[in-house]
Length: 246
Image 1: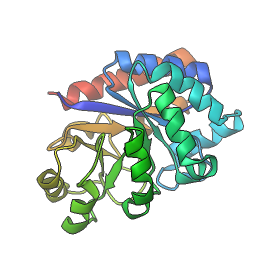
Image 2: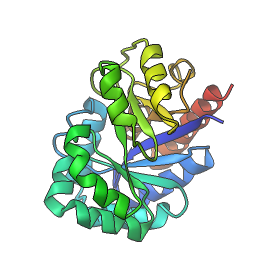
Image 3: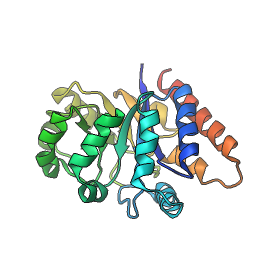
């Protein structure tokens, strides 16, 4: 069974909405949750998630919001904190690790912390039995892929193309997938540009897909009520889960 990982921006538009949305996503078949930490300069994300980040911050998001949401959802669905390194560094990676263990969060997804710079934090992650998700891009050489995925835990995040989230670019990932599979049995998920139209093609050769912008885009649609937004996103999740498992 291929898995579906859903990204949402924590606390957008507010904490209660996030909790209701996660419940609906789980019911729709989502297997894992990326709980995004709002950040003012999300360099790997496209305009959709960037706007959601800014709205969440303007609405008063605090790190305590993330912790409160996590304490409720992490026991129910496998949850990872996705964010940029500045907040982790500012508050302390050790503090985040302790909080993750306290709430049952499984690990961190930090796009701007390259494998080489993540090395000092791996012993801390191992100590707390947490995963620091490894990223692989189609531009990586076989040698670098071998290094990145050698000790990968949780899952491996394959970036579908060189660029930002939400774009509709497409690259042949066959050789990259083969190189990863030769070196690791850790589940491999592909992200960036995955939606109802692309999911069936993108899931070939991998263990699942990661969807973010396609969901968050609905949250930015002010013509929909809160209830309609949740229903629309849940239906998208259900459709994608069905398509990747045909």
